[in-house]
Amino acid sequence: MHKLLLILLAPLLMLQGKRVRGSMLRLPEASGPRQGSAPVADTSATARKMNVLVLGDSAAAGVGCETQNQGVAGQWVAQLSRDAQVHWQLLAKSSLTCGQVLQMLKQQRLEHDHYDVVLISVGVNDVTRRTTVAQWQADLAALTDYLTVHVKAKLILYTALPPMHKFPALPQPLRWIVGRQAKQLNRHLQAHCDHHRATQLLAFEIPFEAKYIAADGYHPSPHAAKLWAEGAASMWRSLCAQENG
Image (cartoon, rainbow, N blue to C red):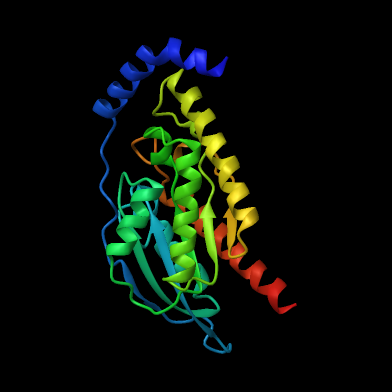
């Protein structure tokens, strides 16, 4: 039934997609450094040193924020540096699918010989590019394998796809269709994380209110990036507590 509906709606969906691409406000990636070090905020504490990597698409690159300090990378580092000395790097570019993120990663120079935790944002472009489930699964497996073997990532946090059925920039029925596809990819992302020891799925709620959505109606604002960063930092601390407990 779903396939038949897609066939029937195909002309309308193509028209809506073309109109959205033509009319959507094009926001740049956030400005500012994409690597650096942050000293521990609590100088009285015995601080650990950690290397972190933020990897992915436009959301990771800070589209919707003016500076990287406002984006998820900067806000995550600020959270982590409360009790750790953080050496960080951001590798992200707009419009990349999961498979393209891996290709970008392979071509980049990494600042460190290992990373304690990698925070990833992928999937939205796989929805809009109609990546098949089989290809999505294969790309996730390849990315996780490369991060584990070559990047020496100890922990990989995959950010869950956002609820695209709520994106205000998308008209109906396009919004409903991409929402279904996002949910499908999320289910397989959850399954991937369940079956790979070094991976975790980071799922968090962002209110669909004006202050949490960028001017394009599509990307996370600095307020949303803060919730994302807090969620990632909280998960990291929780996992560390479990490991040390």
